[in-house]
Image 1 (cartoon, rainbow, N blue to C red):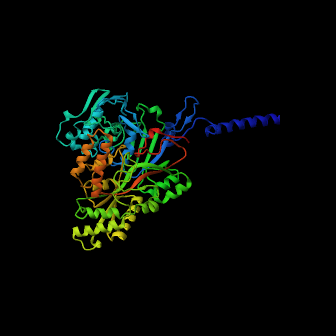
Image 2: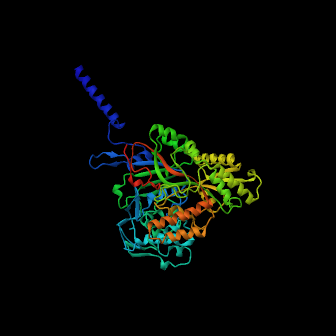
Image 3: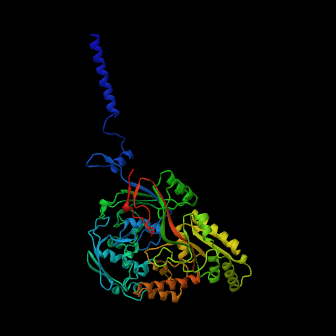
Length: 563
């Protein structure tokens, strides 16, 4: 009897304990949480269920940085790599260049006439982020918008290969004469002024991206905020934009090839200092670091090399100092020559940048086809030549002593740019005896200073938009070119560039471009510093093509996360 009562008691206690365990959800499958608890909503919305295993999977996200607020997220207004890093993933042109090869993108096919003047593109069945179909009229609208002078598109000249484009942009031609013809909703015909061998590379560039016409006409400021009003056609959509803080991209479910886009979300923080970027990478807060998504600080290059994680890739670009040739002092060509020759580029690369760059001794980098050899414009660190040029400059300027020359060197805020500027400042002080003051400003403010010629000497980089020397030479075809920033122009130089555009023989065209470069280099509107390499590091779980191509582009469509 005692034994029976004891068993009933134990059974009773077990039932009570079970009820307590269920109430506390120990071992239960259903999770209960407080109302309005944010974590519950986040887990429910972001986890997806595999239809095969019935297991939930984490969304694939990548964490990146950019150095500043993008100056413009309008494809026809953007001129910089920071803006381009976003636009290249939210928009898509008729073509894309992958590993140096042109592939069809928004267009599924192109037919080229025998005289190489007419390109007929057939669009694929693609949609904008708002669900509307991408049409030929959207491309036409974007290109004509860029060519309309009052819209001040600094890259309008990228469209000049199109028949009548230059004349229309400069106000000497009509819109009716433009070689842009919409055949139907899915067909656009483009007629060129002259055969342009790199035209299909141009159609991959952001200035050639389409714009959703209805959105742009309804709201001229459509590109200034994220959300439903920012209508794009690329693999990702701009879902959030905390100005001067962060940008979030999400997979575009309406993208024609969305099933081949692995990433669900791209989180991009805006971080100004390279040291902070490195700290974030080391702590696992970002997954990749390298232009255009941040940059490797000079102080961590050696450590990343030792750790075996640093990738150094070829990069068709030039780091340079531009000269404001309208400034009373800098207008003197011999002073510009002296400053250019006095820079010790090898010493800068060996001791400061450490990224296996090559000394820049010409405007067109040696990686560009046909420009591989040294054209002999000047020697690196030519101290005697620099002193002779300075002496001649002082005579012409009526200056008695180098100490009377006071110059200002400007650059956008960056630890690396500051260190490089300090090194060159010391070159000029010890070699020439010239006193140079340094000043820096935030990226957008800095770009405005260059555009307004509100500087004397200014740092800038130029990355090839396509694999042809013309991409470096064209920006100086006139002082009014939106990318010139020096005030320099030369009629003979411009004539050679124009002639190169009508020259059918490739070798003869190459010779014309080299003649133009020789004129440019003789007048020193810029001081080439070095030819870029692209340095980057990534986490092991970042897969696919995350390293930038030779033009500095990263297409996140081709990136995956495998944790």
